[in-house]
Amino acid sequence: MEQTAHNSHTKTYLKIFGALAVLTVIEVVLSQSGLPHTPMVVLLIAFALVKAGLVALYFMHLHYDAKFLSIIAYAPLIVASILIFMLSLEWAFQPHWLF
Image (cartoon, rainbow, N blue to C red):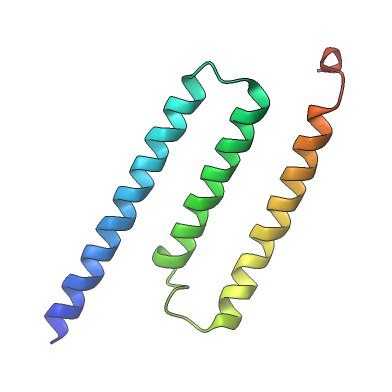
């Protein structure tokens, strides 16, 4: 019984690792594409947040812990996402000769 549970967790970890690898390849391709800067940055931030969520859920075992611990772990991620979004909006509407 325990061996089956171990194989199940290993398969899950390998799937998450594969998803993280695919998302990383997409990020690299996206960064090398000719996409305008602002949409590219927004997409890269979105991919980074998805990857951070996957790492937190499975490799930090938040998927199996109490919801309260997940809230404590995700609160800084949500605040950081809001701050990054606000900063990117500010950057998008500034004259680019300042940078």
